[in-house]
Image (cartoon, rainbow, N blue to C red; front, side, top):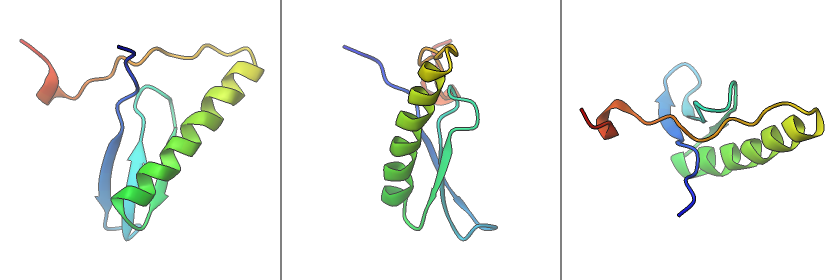
Length: 73
């Protein structure tokens, strides 16, 4: 099974909407008025991030980030 990147989605009072980000991909985030819209936007941003990194010969990090709640002691 292929592992994908972890995505955080949270409500931002300041932006009055939802922010989705991918911790493994530096500064890859997106905004949406709903959690679903934020998710859809960050998935588009992820593809753009990876495509840009590839075209510039930059390394693409493996999906490694896991929230503390999923980590085993």
